Length: 194
Image 1 (tube, helix red, strand yellow):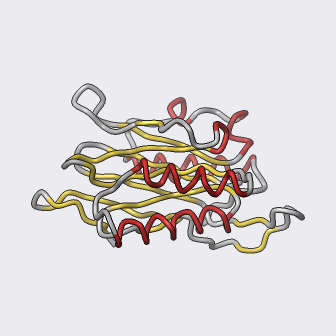
Image 2 (cartoon, rainbow, N blue to C red):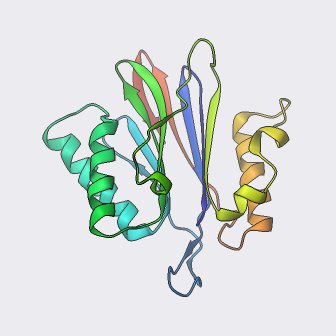
């Protein structure tokens, strides 16, 4: 496993991941710079941890579906794709999906732990304007939680980087090669920032 963290407020989303990829059968490192955040369409980012071939196949199928039928982020379509793939061959995976849905920033997550049945919603709102989701490494369950080491004197990005670095010291499946992708509202249009 690896780690993906997403932070969202009403105007932007930041997703970060580590770069380590391990072989599923041998658990040996096969890459230190695997990209685990995909740009889907013009205003959607999907981060994943889990078995790469299944995760990326699901994202590819979702991207095709969006291009053919629905230009808007449709979590139910992605959820159905994951369930179909899982029923064909069970696999372990976690996803963070973010983008524009009905004119607002959304931050959703799905897990193979419940066969992708429940869509977790951590979207920012007026009541809760700053939200985050952490998915990944099995060691995270024994780690200090992100919110417990969050330092208000630092930016969300620096806090996210520090957490990934911390997890890389306790998990062999995580490294500190950090990739960042962002979505921001500019002139009322949500765009991926390079």
